[in-house]
Length: 227
Image 1 (cartoon, rainbow, N blue to C red):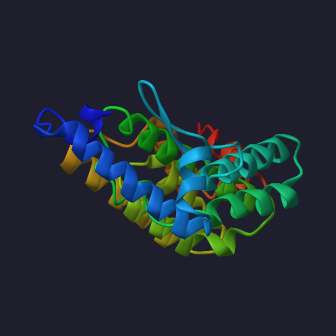
Image 2: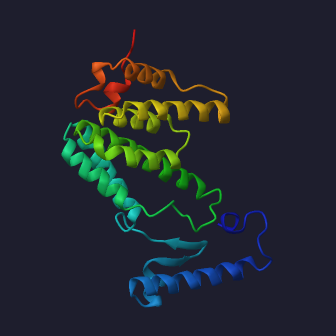
């Protein structure tokens, strides 16, 4: 715990400082929950012989609700219950407020948890776009995907989804422009070209491939192979 809080420079009076933090945290929890501080100390943030124990039941945290909804949404997506999947995935994303633990300096214990949460959200974002394609809601996607690209500038999936959404909205030229911006960005920043699949999607758009039309999901269209 000391390394997580202070890194390699713990204070001389580390034990006293930690006890002060615990007292402050108990008071904060008491105010938030509307409980007496004594109850918080007895039931939630409990003193143990070798330190402290934070008692949290499954479902107490917003991350638990996010994971529950995301898992149910993923299951519905796999079962082709697209309406339900869209509702569940959207509900899971609505729980988010900015970046996880944004006001906390993450150390060696918290950093993997932050990475996990970010990757989980990224997966759900991609799944919700997929299900919107399958529902024929591509007209809702260009603005959403523009925001996602600004947040994840190296994520080729979002660029490809943006290209297809624009194409299905009758905005093929703009979709081709998205590809060009991706290519320029990758060449400048990483010295690489877009992946083979993104290049194939670009070619299919140029050829007005009929496989890109209709209500097929993005992943089906992303597998298009041009001659």
